[in-house]
Image (cartoon, one colour):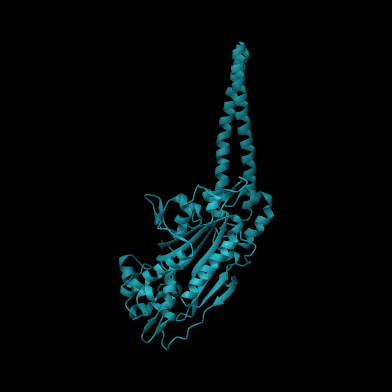
Length: 423
């Protein structure tokens, strides 16, 4: 959630940054500032009236002690009238505070200065590329055919059990999935991330804290009886570990990693781009999250981008890194780098990771703070990244490494899988 101080200092600059993010209702800034002024007015009236009540009440005691009963009775009448005034102010203050909050949470995070303008994925900026595009054998197969050939993932069985977008991993497919998860976790913990096993459902407060609510309410599975939400990513429970906490400056940065299934409705998704593992309702992902000092968050962002890049290099997959344009960024993000790997059989790039800096947007919602060396209370910065999302990684590993005698696996997975070839 944006800080009112930021909006108040330079509203026109805020509107300009929101336009970069392709946010249409920039006049909401003016409405919020008007409500902010109303709240200040009612707060002043409320506090002033309470002060007058306290002063009058103290005066009553003094007058009674002097025996000035008539004057004391007049003061009592004055207090009663002031209390009525206070009661009349309370609902006005409550309403304006609610309206202010409701409008403020509709504003997305402001894009960082490095974010390029643009509205569509085609306007994202390629930062760098790595790896070599594979040369596939004749009659190479897409991964949904390879999974049938080697009997490792059954999409039809998942549809029977639940519905489309819920595949069943079998035999060596399940083992390869487990091998990737373990390798990713080991890679992350070796870099200083603490492994966490969080809940797979979160409260409404947790979903609000990281910006999933109210922005992505339609994309999440909702257990209505208990008002829990199935997590779309482990970023949500991991970051909320520190909700409403006053952290020690010396404890920063906090580095966490977790493997979880993720659940997304993906409403409106259809067509050839959702075949096989390309887009699922349930998928496995290993996440990295950092909570940092605000002065170091962009240094941390670079570190996390390099970390994910090293992981992709170890998987021997061709990749590219994109800085997202304003219109293609997430609601809560200040800046995002996407990682894509090349699917040789499909002849397209597939997103496998996003690394984002949220600056104070999430921490302001969650009230995650620390006191600096001077004793001033400040908001931390939060960052997260996929390290990695498994479905499209697995798809590209299968497609790019297919050969007559099976699927050749990268060296980093040999020990985990127990073989260098899936056949």
